[in-house]
Image (cartoon, rainbow, N blue to C red; front, side, top):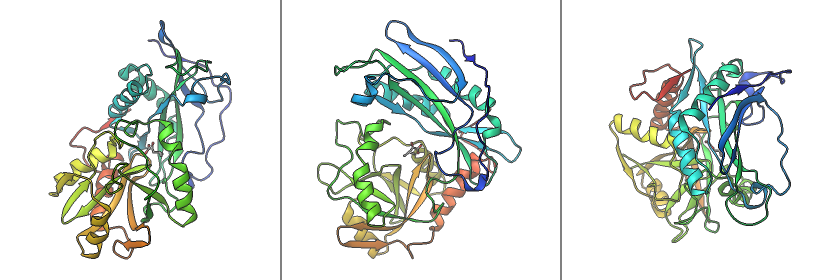
Length: 355
Ligand code: COI
């Protein structure tokens, strides 16, 4: 498919202070868009000025939430070059999400090519300040106007870009996690492993209640027994437990995180035994009290690696260390992963793609 580049008449305001970027609030000058129609396939691929869409009020995404998205980042390296981190993994996951949500798959190579072209045009939006990056958000929505419940026949796929700093306001400061014993995020057979907006919408009430109690995030337990750790909505969870790195297995209810995958590889190379098994709530509390659980952190494209300082479940609270200091292993993983992403360290796995 041909990729058209439409003229840009006016630039958008640039961030005033790169070291103070808020996650997801400011967008670049241009975006990528393509259309889909059953019988015609994907067509009209173009890079156009960033701006609102005209959507019919009956557009199916607005009623039945047929929507998927991805998140990946471009990093500015010390030599000024721009690097993407494992972008093909995101393209593949986008298509897995599409097929679960009865949406049309995209041609992975073409979408990645379009993203690279878009970033080349927007290169001066890739920030340079320490810890910043350009967050890339591929999205697909059902745009057909129709109120019957069935897969749509018309879609929009688009990619927007925003220069970002850290996801949490506190940066790498350990977060306080509330473990929900009431709400659940996903059950077997549902859409927990899909990057679809509905999963996030369903998590908002619990997140709001957690925030009102002073917590940063909600940790979800399995829907059946409400005992086993699943994930935090914006990140997968890892635990340094009895000298091993434990993380919940991918059995359909949690996201197959690309940062999670990378961290498991790095931890293994650092000589740690890695086990994909779900910790129980009792293990978190007893383990922390007995000194078996020494560190915990979340992983995700947006958060990168986010240390956990404290867990609360019902009336029980446990701190890891002093609750405020990033553990040495978490810090080492963070330094290694970001070192590879920003080009400060070698990339033995070929995870990085230079533009
Ligand atoms: C990401 O890490 O890229 C995500 O999509 C999580 C989102 C909650 C920001």
